[in-house]
Image (tube, rainbow, N blue to C red):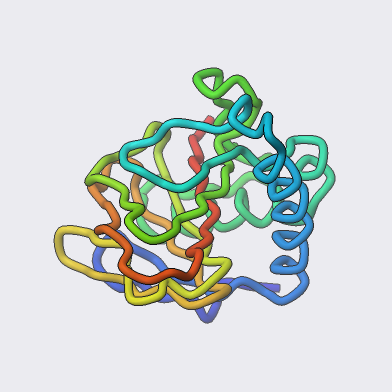
Amino acid sequence: MNMFEDSKFLTEDVLTHKLPKELFKELTVFLKSANKKRKSKYGFLVSHDNHGKNSYQISVDSYLFEKSLMFGYLIKLGEYYYNNKSSEKITTKHRKIRLRRNVDHYDHYDFWINFSKKNSYNETHTHAGILSGVIYYTDCFNCPTEFHNLNFYGKSKDVLIFPSDTKHGVKKQNTNKTRITFAFNLYAV
C-alpha cells in the first residue's frame, strides 16, 4: 500500500500530504495531554523556547508517541520523501530514517506542538536533522508557513515535509484563534 500516492511537491523541495483520519485522532490524544500541562500553573517547566514567540510550545509525550501509528507514519513519510529526492534509494526493509532524538529540550524526540495565539510569530529559521515537517492540527488562520518561494496556507490535516536546512517562518498572527501545529525533525542512518 502506498499511502503517499496523493502527495505532491509544491516546490522542488516542499512536499505536501493529507494526514489520514485515524492518525489525526492520535494527534488529538497528544494534544489533550499537552493541554493538561499547558493549563497547569507549572506548565512553564516543560515549555520550550523557539525561534520566535509562540504562546506555548511543548514536546509530544514520548510514552504516547512511541506506541502510536504516528511514529511509523513520520518515518515512512521521511522514507517516501528521501526516495523521491535522493539518488541513493532506500531499498532495504530496515528503516533508514529515524525521528531525531533531542537532548536540547531534554524530552526525547524532536516532535512537538506549537500553540500560537494573537501576536505569536516564528522568525525565519532552519532545523537540525535532514528532513523537517509541520502538521496542521488547525487551519493556519491566514497566517501561512513562509518559505523563500512559497506561502503555504495549511488546512487541518495538511502535512509539509522539507529539507531541514530550508529557511521558513511564520509572520505575526493577527487573529484571536489558536493556531495549533505539530512539528518534527528526521535524520538518516
